[in-house]
Length: 423
Image 1 (cartoon, rainbow, N blue to C red):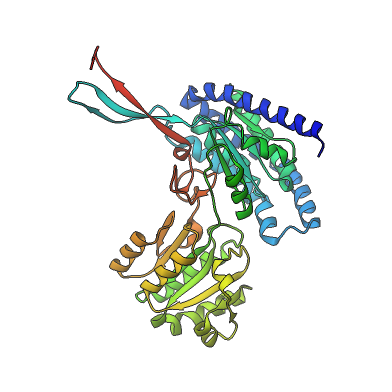
Image 2 (cartoon, rainbow, N blue to C red):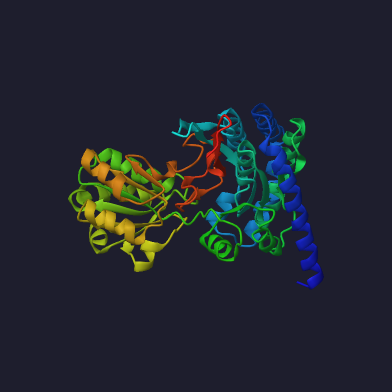
């Protein structure tokens, strides 16, 4: 890339940033009804333009297949009629959520006579960098808008046509509600220099959210000069406890793996208590293998399940995002928790048990952004949590953790009320 092109990209991104900063001031004061109206109009536009979105997505799918994108990435890239309808439903659900902006909480009187509390306010300008999933364009725009922020969205080159088609629907919704057109801007260049500029514009961007593979998140986190909300890999576990119900265990584990292989909430490692291995593993393995799942097991698993191949140390730390499952038989809950702590990514982990003490211990001691009891890990999703949608699942501890919805893109400021009070 020549220096002149670099200068062009820098100027282009600075313009986007300046536009977003100006729009963010207007968005912070937008009426709740105005924001909801924009979201509803976006949903209507997406439904009305579903055929065009599918047509544009097919261009990306063909290009992706030609460039040998993995099956997991192609699955994330594809927009079916059902997924387009889910996008529209997500926008409507976000529109119906309570508006958090301006909410006053914890108002208390102090001995000084002052009344002190907190008000929820937008973060400002959010830069979102994502790969493959074009539905993120709609989800991210909606969440940022509902939280009173402006957004700069940079999707992957593999979803360029899909993202542009969805962006047109977003623009239509903003216009119909009288909101600034620059409240949501989709970067229209696939040049990687645009990302370099975006994550260093401290004067224009308040926080960056990278949503994609481990390599993307690590690269952004290492190079960014603005705060980053990280979404790391989903190395999710299901532990079948000594006290698990046999049928529940099979149903939860099977669904956790096979619902969709390419999502970050898919189970990658199955842990089974020694006492139940003989009764659960053969039945569950048969179901998984018939579904096309390759099993990679510990020594005990391989003895018990003829279809399993020996697992390597690498298998315990790999997010396969494919029909591949690592399986380990453990002595009990102590060894299960120890395995999750050693190999997990602090994303989503589940226990199947009828023992209240074990379920409480698992939820307390497993340090993940979502911990589940008798439920499939694939429920780790903003829509399923009632957030309307998400811009990612944060494995950070600051400033938000788990599915990042509307409230996750806000902060609080102190409000102090006196009556001519002096100190």
